[in-house]
Length: 380
Ligand code: GAL
View (cartoon, rainbow, N blue to C red):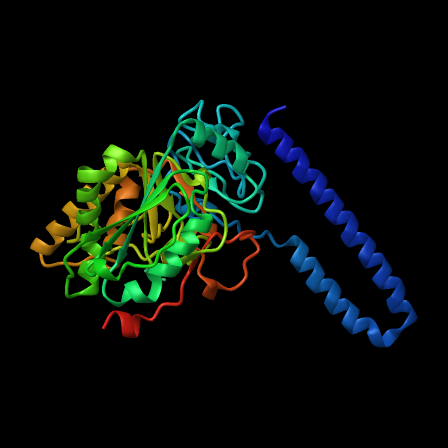
């Protein structure tokens, strides 16, 4: 029986159980009401609310795909199937590229969230993967990872130590990792105790006056560092903001050719809310897209990250020449890049959660948390 048939049968059984449950509850309430007239109104109200709750279809988290009418891929070779909350791909072959460790993913294990994109990239949620399978695979392949982070001005004293010490506990544990710290004050990067297999390099960078330029010009700095150092030593690169703290496993399951992160503020909101750049004269301009990605975390092989950073830099420099600045700076350019060059892996917001979002049913594990932002002090 095909994946979709099993799904349909399962849904029919669930619907029948729900209907049976509603009827039973209704019967019981009716008999109670007959016994006590004062409770009639209250029971009636409760029954109505219960009925509405059970019958209302819940929205599925995971980006624009949860809103089929807006999805870019409608009408293309992978049409929307209507199976919201599950991966639309047949079980085998599940993903591209095939014969990859990502084939071990259980795309059907999470029914509350989208677990793959229309172009066949997995969206990584807790419960879909076996961490040991990933770790063993990447250790066997001799993978090593560069983690780039910018600690400029007061960002260094405010965030860097927590970022690094938590990365040591949770980021790619078991693999060799080098932290590349870009800073305007290398002499202040002191007292970091790293675990075995971890090294740190500080790289002096020029401090731009505007925080927007600090953020945008990191694309140039990362591209340079990949060209001059990283590509000779590491297969994978992750680029992260420093104002974050690791609180759970951020492991080798996150490695991939080209890796994007779902922004935790938009992963379950309609596409109209996405803060793409909407200025037609900016190279980052987007009318529509797939998801809203967060520039606080992106990665991939050094080749992919080099392509991404160089492309974003070209867009930023063209915009500067044309006197325009994209709404969310490098993040707007990153969104445009991933719209044109689809990522091969998408990380769920578990991989960068904003505690201000409050609790969420879909987030079973938090791996990286936004630290408290102090923009008033740090960006002045
Ligand atoms: C904010 C975040 C910004 C940017 C923006 C996009 O929550 O702090 O860095 O990602 O969302 O709308």
